Amino acid sequence: MLKRSKKHEDDKGYADDKITEQKTRTPISHSETRAETTIIGENISIEGHIRGTEHLVIEGSMKGNIEMEKNDFTVGSKGRIEGEINAQNVKVSGQMIGNIKTQGKVEITKEADFMGEIKAKNISVEDGAYFKGSIELDKEPHRKTALAGKSTTVTNTQPENKPETQTVKQQDKET
Amino acid sequence: MATPSVHAPDYSHAGSALTDYTSMMLQIYVETLARSSTAQILDLGPVCEENIKYFAQRVKRFHVCDMFIRLNRYQRKHLPAKELWEHLDYVPHRFDGINLWDFIDHLNDDDIGKLVKLCHTALAPWGMMMVTSFEEQAAPSKTLSFVIQDGDRLTFRLQNHLNLPYYYRSNRIITNMLSEFHTVKSFIYRNGVREFLCRCD
Image (cartoon, each protein chain N blue to C red):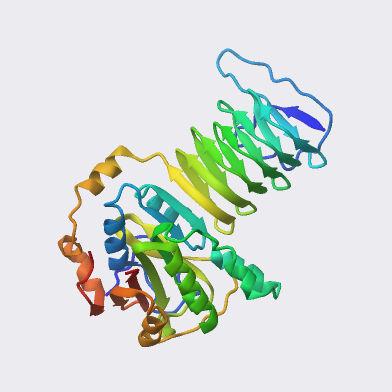
């Protein structure tokens, strides 16, 4: 069953929503344009691709790719997804096998069981999440420059680091 | 001596001497790996947002396979340990660096042998592995994660969801167990943390 609701400001509350056939249209004001959210309930299974221009929450199971570059996608705590996701922001609280590509942020909560690759601008991962995968973040230009200009040997590091350690064995065989 | 951080985290659940510190091993490791534009690192966990951001900003691709949480699940459900290692099913020579953190402190000798072999296979020639271990008196009663802060400073965070055993081993035993690798440097800190930076020759 599908439910459409207003976009929640903090993206909370999806899990608490009961699955109904109710549809709620959100009036679009001139000052603030909010996309609608579609929720796919936990008793729904989907096989196939989804493309859309509103936010999507999946509490059911889905096999296929999701394409919604301008909107947010959430795998709810009961959701199970196998596929590729391309969305503005992605939040995973359920099970997911597949790759995520976003222009924005990926959020992996502690309930999540994720396996796949993530390409994003930013990421947040809660302690306790099951995670196996790779992360590629947009590099901050200043960070790259700073690293490139850094000295190549540890002996040139700030002196205040040194007194903290007692080297028990030092073999200067590093490359 | 390890200097306390500004925020003075609460380590009362850990060994009495445990304080955050600046990791020399991390500095060498990251400086070496960040020289390559194609470096890939594997982190064995526990999953930690700060560490993910730190490494993902510095290397081409950062991989995470949280073996702490998997070990916890296998032990809790009394599953065969053999299956645990199937999670590290990476192709040979895939990584330039592996972050083991203190995972060996939670494994018996047989499992360390298996882990070391898998890491040796997964590392590229000249690849590096970062290993930490707690001294017996500093060993926390609960599992902690090492959390990277600014300036290569490491703090600790309690992992309440993990309940793992702890095995103490002397420096000599640890280096023997890592004998497939060449130990580049090792450090011991007054807060009871030992660091071993190893390289695959």
